[in-house]
Length: 295
Ligand code: NDP
Image 1 (cartoon, helix red, strand yellow):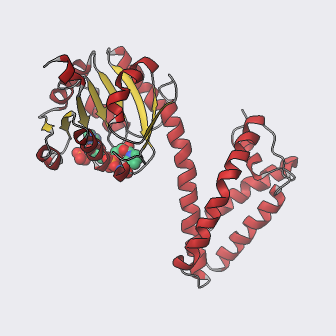
Image 2 (spheres, helix red, strand yellow; image 1 turned 90 degrees about the vertical axis):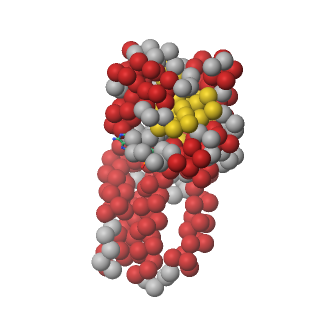
Image 3 (cartoon, protein in one colour; image 1 turned 120 degrees about the vertical axis):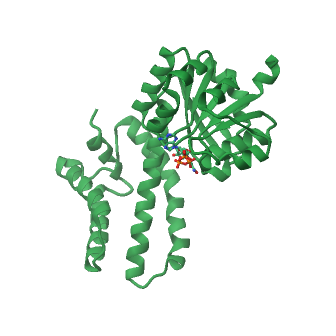
């Protein structure tokens, strides 16, 4: 295979909804795509579109200078790549791991890759599978800058925006988890709000436009909160935490009167009350971040 063909070749390991979307975007961009998945048959549609289905992960990685790995977690990622045959085939090539997991596990896999002579970049995908290949996709990357620059052009075929966050392998996973923390606590709040509203005779459709209005309040509060958190100073001039705790108590009371589990809001109120107990009742709600992480 000539050098130019090799540079336009990419392997995708893992063909769940996300792996299939990644491989599909590479195909749409005209790259030579080799795919492999633990369970056979998931490559059928991609092969019909022109991908090569490899019989083993080692054969798959040997086909391209760049391998993109995207499976459920790092146990699965390790089960695929840490074997002797795959490690040997990856030696001197680059592995971009877009699997989601913790920063510590990303650093551990990065150290393993380095010890085996494998170029390693870790990444996170912040948008759903249907966005891949469109301008809406959002990718975060971490690892050696030079290696990232080398493969940036191929990764751009996945569409959207790509941000290199720095050399620390765990940094993309750190952003991923912090952002998913925002997402899942918001979704838990929305699920609870729907249950409470229903108990009071308000349908989800009736509430939804106003719920969207609540989310529109958040971006400027996030900006202001970022400045507060970085400065370590939380002025409560807009809404002191004593007022926030009172509002949370109403939600807990109204929920429990209707027999609705209020444990998520109880946890938030508990943090607010602890901060008030420490003498910060006049501060902003985000003062609780210093309770959660005093360092
Ligand atoms: P899953 O998270 O369900 O992962 C499915 C893939 O993992 C399949 O290829 C599956 O293989 C493989 N797998 C699971 N266990 C093992 C194992 N022990 N050994 C080998 N392979 C294994 O689906 P997605 O494709 O949606 O997600 C992949 C990654 O992308 C995840 O980390 C997810 O968090 C992330 N992501 C997904 C998004 C989405 O919209 N889907 C959005 C953003 C991030 P098999 O078919 O053999 O079971």
